Length: 422
Image 1: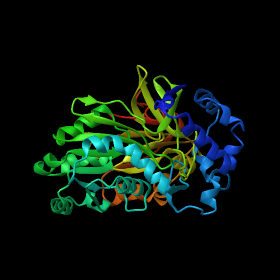
Image 2 (image 1 turned 180 degrees about the vertical axis):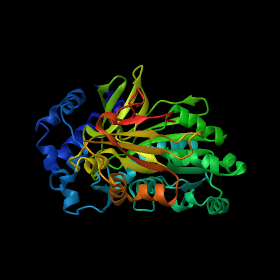
Image 3 (image 1 turned 90 degrees about the horizontal axis):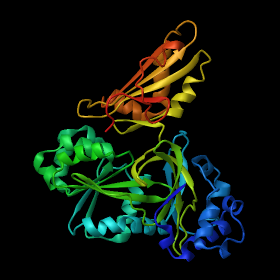
Image 4 (image 1 turned 90 degrees about the vertical axis):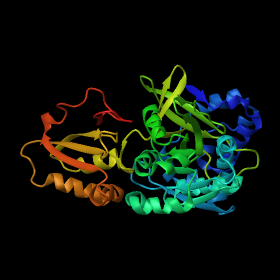
């Protein structure tokens, strides 16, 4: 187990307060923590948390997990809706204290890189989406002298209109998904790209290769790679400049990493509240499903939701595909071949290869495709309407499913990456 976030530098009272408030107000944590935690040292508290886990499906148990002040509507809050990998929405309470907490998480890089008069063009979905609500809320609390402009996502598919809109607002930085920033580097005029000083990205994995490729098109920009989640705001961030990638910093959260395979570790998040705060959702060792790649004791990359591939920003969830495929008794196996976005491949592609026994069922490929579209409208939009990506379904005899696959598995043992995933 590896701990990140320098938790021992916090006052002992903050961690104790967090656990005490969780135990007082949540049946879920009351069952899991020892009643004598108030007498523990910080080291003992961290040790006591080692065997405590919460997973995304636990969050569906609203009656036990939500604190009493949220269930009883004792404090003002909004509800963020986030899908996760199961296809079932998670409902995350977000209070004014969560805004303040996220502002503290953002503050170190805002203090250094944001200047008076900056104009933020935000390409996250309209409020109250999780990312949009949290980002806007944090800036609102910090009150920097900047302008925040929420841009319609549809403009990313309309180049001429996008450029016209951006010319009117003259953005100095973008707040968007990692892939969006990469694509904007190929879409915008040179002068506009030169004016951009900051790229706040997140929601998808950012490798060194993709970061440097993005910065080639934004010569005066710095990237803030924010590792965010609806449950705890932005637990970690790092600064990436041309030729140099900084280390992840965790100013207000504890990240616990446990070995997964090789240099990859499962990421668990602990949310630490300041004295007097009532944040929407106390969490300890939350197994968010992401992986961290660790080299020489340092986090190299955080791999977002290991069973998801990105099709021009839309997410194709592995377990959605799995639930569809295995409803058919004659389909026994499947793999996904992923052709990621790169300079040589401007249209990311996913090939779902399903294996059947006996005779090939008539029309099965189109039936699976339509069922995926029914359950995942963003994928339908990216593939069918905007044509920014491709989705191919192949039905083959069972013994041919795993023939000719790349030797190294990609994000899961069912996902195989073809080419360079930047």
